[in-house]
Image (cartoon, rainbow, N blue to C red):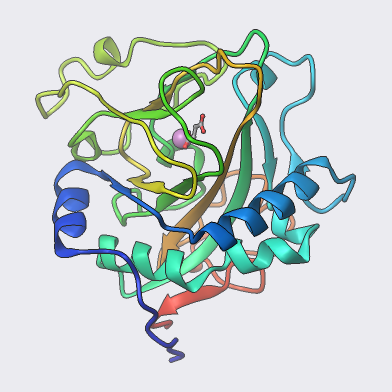
Length: 269
Ligand code: SIN
Ligand code: NI
């Protein structure tokens, strides 16, 4: 068994209770002003680099590009991004919120919501797109904004408690669906969405089962976000196709592990 050293985080018991109850939480000032300036510089460079290890999943002029200009695993082309994508404070915060024994890195992504005919990110759960067997294990995202965000430039909204609906069918992310019809007949009373504006350097965490949405960007500048996906130690690979697991040699049914998916904090098996 390997273990990692505990790091100080801004997470309070109130954050933990809110996250577990509602499936998301806002955490102010996750980054210091110095870290924010450094991250802006590195992520700008990473998003504009021609490196061939990260994956730009959306082609300019493609339908989905209007929703997101997304680059997956920017850390693989920009060494500076390792400091943020593997940041112990972010991972330790995820550990405390989720209650997992250990937290592994699954992937990072730069999420630029581009100006000009911008589309909202439709309501969806993340879990249906991840190649994990244990949908309820608590895989989650941190979403750190490099810009102040509100409804005008792509802030997020969440449906409280929707993580309790369990894993539903994936939604077509290029064509919006009314999830309030979609989850009709679900086991829980679906709640009103909560819109979460944020200051630059602040973040949200959300459970992969929580329904979330991001507004279109009606300003003339990109909305710049770094998101990192964390997977609890012990979660196993389902074998489903996914851009970060394809070609890594992971075997169906084995725990997510190996050099692309390091244990960031907590106890490993
Ligand atoms: C977005 O940044 O627009 C969406 C992020 C997400 O779906 O987690
Ligand atoms: Ni999502």
